[in-house]
Image (cartoon, rainbow, N blue to C red; front, side, top):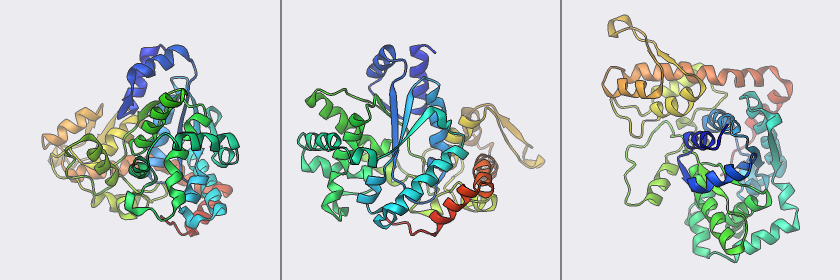
Length: 362
């Protein structure tokens, strides 16, 4: 694959690239650059984690990158996830790996890294302190959205280490491309800024979008880009809001029940989560979708790409109920292999039972 084709792949999965010129240089000088994403082990897997992330990863791997999945156990502990119990955090991390396997992540092509490996290294903490010396307390607090918190939501001083630690991860792992969600943008920008000041390799930030929760987002307008991105983060699908969230273990009936209540006004695209699931998940997984409809309403109709489906919806040719029914069918088909894996694999089933019995804490 030539450089321009690799850039096209990254652009197809990224909401924002900082910068495209630097990304081109990375691919021109390195056949196998390192990309990474990191996750706090907390709770059961939902669509963004269990379906969307694996689909994006499989596309990204075609460019030849070496990908590192960071299981951020130290962050989960600091952030009070799973009651701050490291044994529980590790169990959830092992469960995460089983979800990715079941979703088709080629585990031979990715490296799973537990953050404790970094946490126990003195060189890592030297980087943390050097980074912390290069930015202000105010910037640290503004960046706390990466931990799912706001400035007035800090419960412990340890949580203030979070942004400097996440930036240090980038350099400790030797990352060329930060390929995380747009909600982690502030940490990526911090890493880029301190890299210039400290003379370290500056990473490219290629942020993918955050999938909307079932409530959608009825207005995305904002005075500035940062405020708009904060609004998008607030509207994302979150495991802490189970009724606005679809989990990979949900039955077809549960998926249908949740989608039936989803925000999906006729002819409206902006903030419509059902349309977004087609664009970001379904049409990444398959090249054609058929929407079943009664004959009196025109019968079944097939769409070769997302733009065709969106155009039909905007024109009023596709009813919201038909769209939701089709989404139920397609999402159910995609999560079915994951459900089956956790039903038939003893280790996976035991991990799911253990995670399900835990109290998910924020």
